[in-house]
Image (cartoon, rainbow, N blue to C red):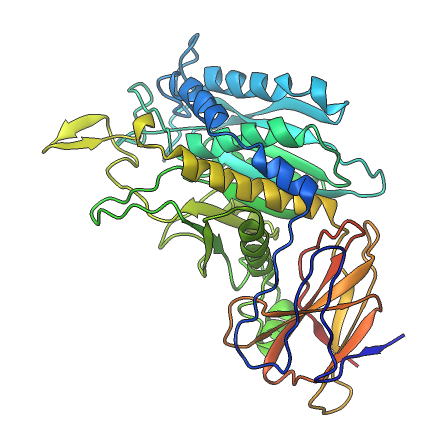
Length: 460
């Protein structure tokens, strides 16, 4: 049955304890919903520990260098570090009731004349938390890269502690596995410490190709690269209250049909990666205090890249999380004191409270996504006639069961969704013009968890 929303007739809306407040008439101002946290998810977030993160990171930097081409030695180099991360992942298997399994996915890489000068075995350390619903094949993937470097990209022997780049991302994975492995989720979550990032995103490219060739239903990929430093170089800024999310606008993989649809609907700011970025901001700020998540409208930093990019190139939805202010005295530097300035990615530069908050964002987002039903299918906006109202319709998700749906709305100049209208029907008409507003639809599960939003396509 169609549901019509009349102006001045929308009551206060309370859904499953989420308590989103809809204020009328619409003034154009950002209308902030009341924040109600799911107690179970909030409990998981509260378990993220600075002590645990510090313990893992001290262990990780103790291997001296984690350069991709470092020799295999006992207690030193990347292979020793991989075995350490694997052992940490495996230590949580017993408490997972059989849901968690960890392994190293090895692969051979030939010399390429650039950053790999010999044949080398690389490996991605993977912990898979299997979903509990046998009918749900969705996969959510979160990564950090285990390798490190100094000034010379080919220097595989000097100490390269890589505390922040990207030890911070790897220890966030370990902490998430520790906590999340104790809980069941309908969908599958894969935590992966990839190799070869500094040598050209090699491990991520290998894994993205594998996911594509094996037809994974990979819904979202989150790359964590440098999430533990709160002090910038050059500007003396120190800020552990903001986190950046980088997301592509126009997809790296776009067919002519996709491009034509994007142009006709003006969806340059509504790619799947942008929807994931908005979701990270909303859910992350809901569960993590004293942290603002900044949406950066780039695939990555200016003229730079990261491990999410190979997944984008394979057509997957992928984003990068990164600290607000980078410190270039610590990034890709030989360990040295020069002109009174300490250089090198040393562990003493890590802000563990900042790392805790950024790890918590990842956990909250992944737990919410993996608990939610799949996205609504065939989301469309009716263009059968000219009207100052907007009618949307959709079908139920392919995975999980939706108790209801949110229709999201924002002005075309807004970066975030500003209003959420709830319905249990499969269509809704709103007294707002599609000329002036953008819309999307997300599914809501019985537990209140929300799917990613889906931007509508024109339908008659």
